[in-house]
Image (cartoon, rainbow, N blue to C red):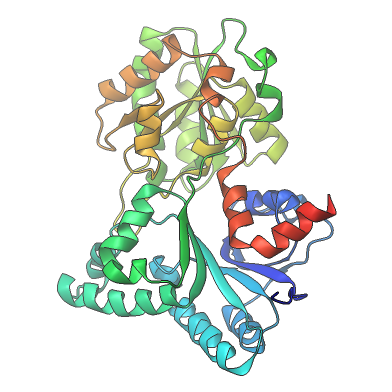
Length: 379
């Protein structure tokens, strides 16, 4: 029988968000490293027993080289901005396999659904064939340095297959598709979580920038209220368009804006919401992977209006939500919102389609199987 490792595990994120820390409460215990905090980062939400530290990828590479951890979660290879550091971490892992009997195993969670060769070619102006060949080598090197990969969307799995071809089917790494869907909030598993009253609330949660489709929502809102005079819009978040949004809301009908609220206020917004709108827009160097507000809104039983940019667009369509082109007209977005309000299902019906265990937590347990087994035996 193989000897059980006593080394700890760790996770390394380039951009850390509050939700990453909150997830640690139910995950296999391990150190949490990050390169930079995102706009919604609140370190107080981390478990007190977890080491949370901002550091550089070079230090992480040194820890991998030393074999400090049994397993380390790293940024997925398909993320272009992380590719340089992933090459270094992959090289450190390969050297570590030569130096140590129990080297650090690299694992990752993959949800990048953009066309990576096209993105890189657009930013570097290299011919697409040259770009694809270079990425096949570099991404392939990083991918084959992993021991385990979870794909969080079908689009992500298809993207890796399109780029790497036969490499994806080799023995290493082991891979599995686990949709990045949430579980229902605990208080929504019974009739107590159904909608009551006549309130009709539309909610936007996220960064106040062009990528999230907030302008399209603002442009459509007057026509939504013309159809549904009692409809309320609650905009929650912060970002570069804050002044524009506040100026617009001052004269818009039935609109409230909450800037940079604590997590408890965000949960309250979801709980009071009927329809969550996130019409993600395409950008040259970015594409919505899933959309955290979509995931969180689903967990509270919200109807979703999203664009085809999200990696779970097909799932949303199949389960009764509205998915539009990111170039949807004002009238098309209005119709989707109004229809969602008028046919709004009880929350328990919405969350019935969700998995019993949060998909990201299921992925974490599969990425760190030995540590999960130890936790389960302890309980």
